[in-house]
Length: 353
Image (cartoon, rainbow, N blue to C red; front, side):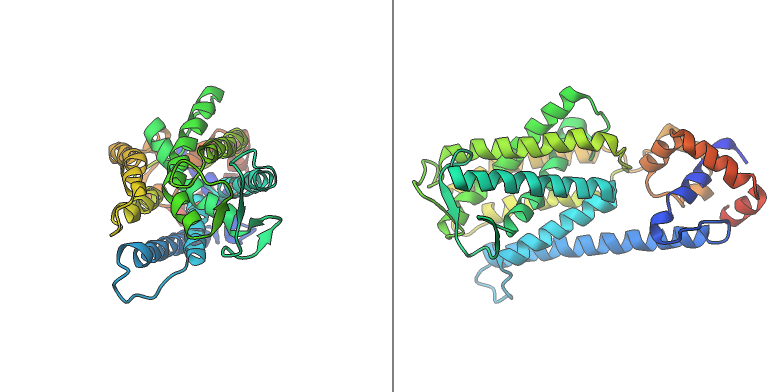
């Protein structure tokens, strides 16, 4: 068997342990592969379902209020989009990456908000009402979730515009800084759209008002600072995770971009045209159009050069080429390959090929 094929079989064996089959030998490896495929399909379905629930909730609440549709409250819409973002991140880039982004976002945003409410130094003087449910300190538990539900789509929009790919491959410090700043601006554009409406609805109160539709300009500087720190911390931490990324173009990968676009569209298509409708059209619409243009330029069939020599019969067992290449570069893979194929290479080749 060619060395490259042997490497990829070893990779398949070593990367299917998350399926629950702790001992992957020649007999249960095909079953593990099948189970992994089913798990991936199920996660994509759940993520897409959560995305659809969010879109429906926004349409029912903003675009067509005259249609008799079951109303979905803001709490459920936030939970639906947060669930979508977390599952999408885990299914696309690995659960370590998804969990790292979620925990980083939750910790940083809650900390900044807690200091902001107590001092008024970060966003201005404000406080939350009881409309958003239970609180942790002075901050509703729903707020860190709301940050994450847009932190993730904004990150992917920025990556497409800046790098032309869904997830950055470069770990250069300068690029991490630039990407964090751009992503913070993309994220803050969302706040410029939703903050006036949410504060007018009574979810939080600006104690001294503000020059931008009742919102102080100080708030947007705080948003830039908060999201910049989130993206910066995540950018430095994820370098050690060696994320497994499939950079091919597919419709599932496009969903976070559409989620970001949906937030803008429900404002633009609102029956009552407001200043935030114009802000949404340009501040959020422009980066979305750029991201879609870059996404359309991604190849649906491009794979790394190392994979081109792998037999087609082996490719179908590997869903993330980036994962395979990352592991292939680790010396432990070659040792695992030697141990694995020293026992029964003919049986393994016959079973999987």
